[in-house]
Image 1 (tube, protein in one colour):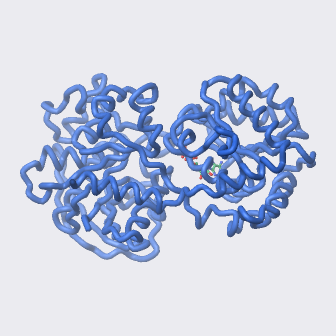
Image 2: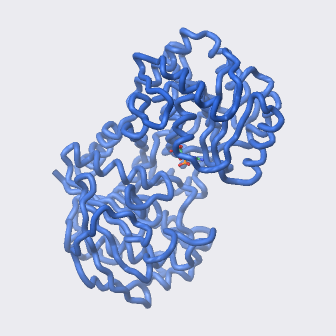
Image 3: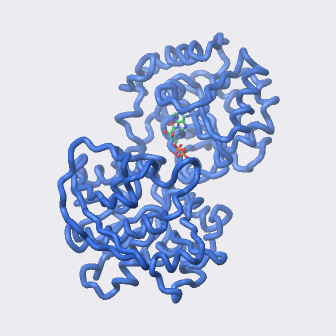
Length: 476
Ligand code: ADP
């Protein structure tokens, strides 16, 4: 079994700010369950939640980046069968916040994650020597560069293959050119398509340059980032298109299954859907909406940001609310979208309701109680909510992008699990909503569609199997 070492800046259950932590909480454990030998390296942040005290594995690792030296200790703990190495360097990681405080990034993030990446190489030298180094997002991007450039002669790293996974290409780790000096990286590497990006330093690009394969979190996103959604890296990626692919994330069936979810009014399953109407009633009650049988409840659970496509809802709100439906929204984010949903709710108090905030329990109630789920994203590397919706028998209405395109089927009708629209336009969204509302009227066919979605396999076991196959391919 080839050993696999994963480098990422966050992982459940230790720390989470986004979807990366969910992947890192699930994928290594699933690979271990499948018989792989996997370890993970993480920074030891102040906010890390630890069930027990980790043991010290390596003391006083001296790391010099540019003009500054740091003393780093490596601790080790085991979580769900996965060895986790925690990089302790209090001046860099013992702070409130992972990447910044009060809305702005820490000014020394490049140094913090350079030290972290050097510590990853330290783990490889002293504690866990892998055949595969699997790096995630820009915070881990300097690990391949240090390994293949700075320490190119070190036999520890001979034959190690590098997989780089992009979770959202909107975040690239861009710093002013002067950061090169802080990091001790020679200006010889400050070249276009390597580290130089419009005069700045781009760590994500540098990490991918020194990797053997680039993956993203859905097959369609892997194609899209080579075009319109590349955020400036499309040409770089297109030049490597034979080494770019996508693997859809899984979902956590322990937390998200209507059969055993404790946060919903009644449990139900593909073979017995009866509990779902109690969930619908509970949701309408929660939002003080009076039921109109036959009118579908359209649910939204989302960050309210431009990425999520709510400007399209703004374009068609009036027409959409003329349909016989309910709209229930949970989310928070940009003030303008929060206000838009508040305005819709106050204009249509008998049909629409909104809760601004982050509420885990309510998100489960909406997945279970809604009849359909709305996700009109501008772009979506993978997306989780559409998979939760499918699993809860709540057909999603999605824009055909990224993981939404890959997880939802809209045609032919006998295979459909939801509704998709392609054009990024209010008219296309409105047409999809009308289709869904129309289809909801045919109850037997609707139930068939619900069941088809519920039967789909979005397990982590399936995703982990694809990663294992990719590791094997890289070692051939
Ligand atoms: P993204 O990671 O881009 O926000 P995903 O669909 O991949 O989108 O994942 C979003 C996750 O965050 C889901 O688990 C979703 O339920 C949750 N979520 C988003 N907003 C809220 C909210 N306001 N309250 C509760 N959960 C939320």
